[in-house]
Length: 408
Ligand code: ADP
Ligand code: ASP
Ligand code: MG
Image (cartoon, rainbow, N blue to C red; front, top):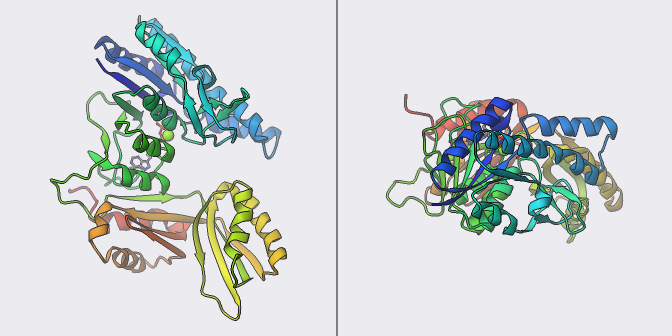
């Protein structure tokens, strides 16, 4: 008998028939004698609808109130799934994040989990019940409802698995595992049987939304056995996220291509080239709770320099407003920006031992006439910022260049 946490995403619970289908899968595990905790997302499209609704009422929704609104999506699915389970004779009980309780900090819309009380869930599990928990949501110490950021149900699932010391956390979604790149963009993408935590962390942080990045961080930190599988297929082992590289196999140089359409680039031109400038610019951005991704500072000329960075596209206008103020403070020349960019990255632990990966990547892009606007590298990834119109082309070309296409 094992304790298994299963997380089902929005498409997997997208209509009553699919919810009943999930109930049947859960029932099979339950019938085999396993203890099952199920974490569910809102029905597909629901969270987007709730956010749009909020924006119709208040252009920039108050974060606390937005969380009140958004958390309702998951509250619907936990109730429905519990009913579907009871209907086929499986005892079940649903919990909101607050009822569990999933304690978070009070950073509304992107709260972090601080602790989880596993006692109520254990009582139910020991009594033979399936426990159904709302993903994406928690509660702060003052009892306010919080949410964990888009895609946050993955993190709920892994965090519950960590708290319960579950034998496995299974992420059921609408693809049958982690692929070499998004199979919706490159049909030749291949499913990976395993991927290392390190690579998955990079893939997730560089835009592969199959797993929310925090869920991978959590799984790595608490040694949760994590697997991505399809909720629409009964067969298949999915993709196991592993700690170790497979020592028996020749490690591919590149394991996957990730991309992100949600980026925007900002540049502040003609800032004084002196100590403290980066802090002055990025400190103001950080104070507004805006995450900065790539950062580039040019070599100075005549006592001045230019500074560029990227942020999430949704925070572009806010970041630009802050930079205008910084410009006035510093006596900088100009603030420019572009919110029609994308970031494409090649990821692989194999590149540590293979020089020349960057030049292969740049040549492949140059051969297609694609201009690179920014570059950033680490030991296991190379990212480039491009005009968003080149996204699909760049991903396909790099996928082919690094030999990731399915053998035909
Ligand atoms: P869920 O609603 O189940 O959480 P998501 O839409 O968040 O599902 O994540 C699954 C989607 O992630 C897939 O439909 C796929 O388009 C996308 N995706 C992006 N990159 C990858 C990848 N490397 N491997 C598999 N899926 C990917
Ligand atoms: N429903 C939330 C979202 O759409 C959380 C999730 O699906 O993981 O972002
Ligand atoms: Mg998701």
